[in-house]
Image (cartoon, rainbow, N blue to C red; front, side, top):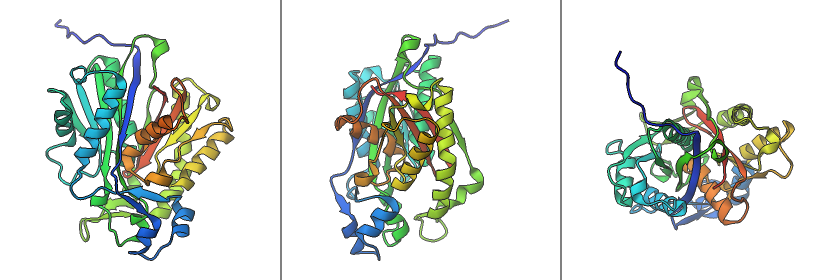
Length: 329
């Protein structure tokens, strides 16, 4: 019988570097109040956002992906020649072809990598991280650059106060490499799934405005009941307990959702001193960019330290969700 040769596998994967990018242009709640019927306190009370970053017309999604990816690569200590796979998680490319990953890799200077986009909306980075970890573990890739990048401003109806107050633009990235021993494993098994029966609660209204539509209250109820169990499953799959988690980094969808998930995890044994990402306050909801960017911002601010255990959990349109436990690089 003919047998196939497979590449040598490694015990697991770990994150080697982080990076992020945001546009310079800041849009405050008061700025939005000049266009739609709203005010600063109304927005803070409902979603917890004070300001968000919005890219100018001459800044593309790929521009932000290149900047975030370059910073993550520099942080990792690897060279461009070391990267053999690039994954861009995004749901906001204005055209599906060409994909963002190949363009991003070329502009960073990564030669001939495997390059593909992944659309799981706000869960995209966790999906990409899970795929990258499995590629590395199986030997199909050595070093993977995973980027979550979104230019949501291209798809937001700026006259719809239910969405224009929430979404923003950014990119966040991580470099994933192999763990040389079981003690070095830094990315836990992914816990993921979907609720396709609720797909229409977040969608692009192609038949009318071609803009993003969201049934906010429906999404809020779903997220506050369904996401904590996903997070707990990710912890269990990694062989840990909620008390082992130092930092919770959920998708920055809504500060009330973030706080609700944290409260449920503490009821299940998470520590009171578990730190919780709140990047949404000054960054808004940046979909697949929110988790890696929040990690990068927390590390820069000294709120997390290398070696600590972080619980990531993404959720959004699809409806799709995913989470995993990681060790902070």
